[in-house]
Length: 104
Image (tube, rainbow, N blue to C red; front, side, top):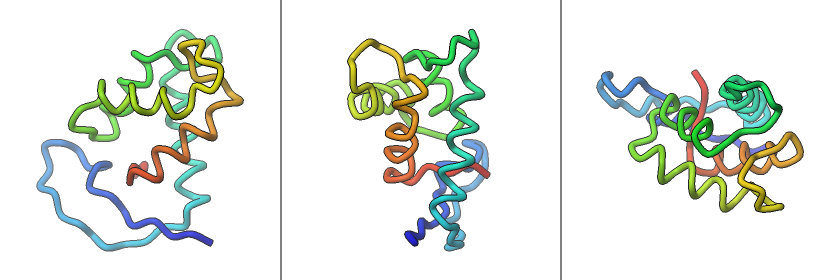
């Protein structure tokens, strides 16, 4: 089982950044990130647009959510249709975990 350290990226931008050093199992983090990303599907079409993904990374505390959303799209949007579908969501979640994002 892989372990990922809690990331300061998931802390409110107004809070002081302190690395807690706590470790959470990756499947737990992935499950919560997947639910969080699905929650940003504002038009409920079952796909994430770039704007919806940008809003999601903003809520995760990204310093550059537009840039991060673009990078995530290049990684996860396998069919290059401009949306992250249910089938591509796992790639998005793995990208987010690899870059230290967690849901608190």
